Length: 118
Image 1 (cartoon, helix red, strand yellow):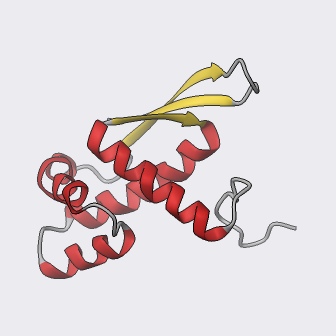
Image 2: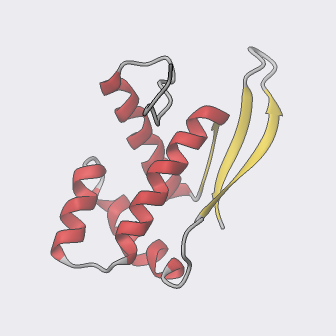
């Protein structure tokens, strides 16, 4: 049974999974879109929505520390999140990203999707 299991395992161990989601989040923040498998895009979307909701509160010390705890690798990505991205969504109650399905990959027929800002 899958009671109280909220995230996808993505066929990875926990440290590798968190590193993958963090790195894809950084790429999404830096480039504005992310193309990957549908399952990975959905996990990245969950993570990004939480980060933007946190960054919307403002650029004070506590929110910066909490965001740095969630995304510790790149300070430039956090700066872009707080300065450029989060102010655009201050009046929006949620749903900052959209997933666009792109069909299936030829090699392994995995469902591919693109994640982009609304």
